[in-house]
Image (cartoon, rainbow, N blue to C red; front, side, top):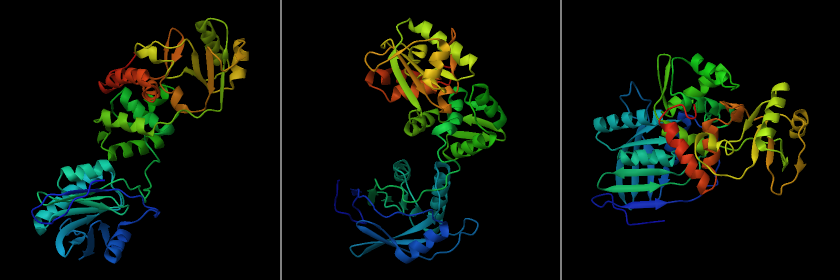
Length: 383
């Protein structure tokens, strides 16, 4: 924590404050925010802010209100815009609106929302624009005179996202598909692309995920067309939201036969029983990059391991010591999406492979970086 003396006039100081809140809030409307600000004000230590002159915006001509910041008897007024929700796309609109109002009213601009992420606070600071949230974060900025930055408080206002998380779980197949093919003529084309690659998803889920991705300024939609515009951001959010596949059972052991023979037997058994099967991402790494690894067959299946082994006519000694085969039963749809078959072997998608490797040790992360660069170039990896 760094703390300096603050002066509203000709001294440019920075204060970083972090503190954990224990309060818990529910979703909040714009009217409730306005009422709370008018009644309670806000604090961004050492500054106290009071809000007044509240009036509904009329055609964008009036601000939501005026905030008076007070510290040691000094005061400074801001013209304020309030929003109940903020996505990257909405944030930019609100920032532009606040700056236009500030020019008209002759006061520095400020926005107030339920929650500001570190990324959004940085955008506000870079734009010389003040912003506060109701969760305890904020930035007060007057170029050349004042800068107070407060970060690290959790989001106390959980917005009802269009989907719970467009970058996690089965819904992430939409984001993954856009990394594999960055442009689609229509939503139906994207749905068909996912389903053609063994992805089980509905038109409704795809539409909701796309709306969230558009709000996050990850994609652009013009008429019916869909285009990926920030693949780097999309990769980052996929990685941040990624959790390993849900496991029903994991069986390790030794097969005692060539691994290629064992895999071929498992693939035949899967086809005969309509089971799904795919090499894990880590086991698929050498399909897309150079990686020396221990000779172990790691496989995702959606059937009990013992059942598939029996169907394949394979015997395995179950042991965690020096295993050469590992079967992971899962119903997680992500691992069976975009499986790439080569010489009869079903390898994980390059996106699934990258996500698994990126969470591994240094050696695996180095291979993951190769895959990441290929995905960012927008070409069909491993085609």
